[in-house]
Image (tube, rainbow, N blue to C red; front, side, top):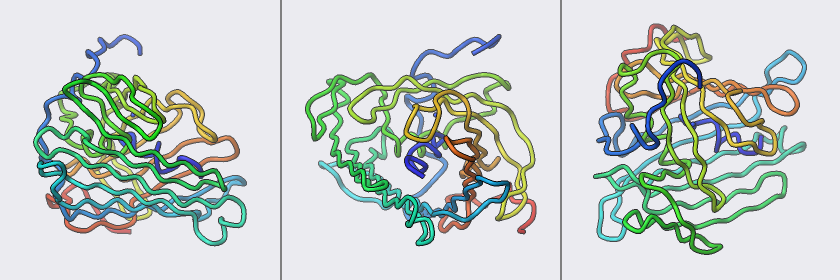
Length: 266
């Protein structure tokens, strides 16, 4: 399950369409999609022999705090495998981001993960005026409107997908593992989807993935968010090195808006 939490949400990130400029919709948006106190639970399922098995869980929470004299959303993502899967590959991941409430840009990012005994800790402070990031390992040059892996999820929820046609891509830059990655979301349109929670009206897209331990790079992953003002992550599907994974929203609290995309509960 390594990096399942990190990559699944790059929501939370080529053809006959005209590409947007880097940073296009990832600069200057105001938050209208979520609020402090929101909590979302995702369940991870693994399929290697035609049957999906419940393998782990990820939770996203955010609170309103003061950081360096500014109000910030303290967004936390915790990912873990269940005891049965711990025997094969134990995951205990924690990602944190302090996001400026005025700009929705990250001020601080913390990655503290243990994936099959492979441990990583990185503490990053962003200076958006100087376009630099100071991490546990040094000082690195970044780009304007840079996001971290957690802030990108919350920022992307504020994109107005009605502005795009199927096939359009929405580029953004992300800082991870002391590197800047030039990524994008490819918008695929709208459809109805049945998840383990229920039936929804949804927005569908594919994020460009960073090649990792079990994920291949490219547009192999598909994600759906709710077609309502929350843009809540509903489902992620992706092939991995051995088998496939499916990640479904399993519960939520304190959404900013009514979940009007929900057609029926399973």
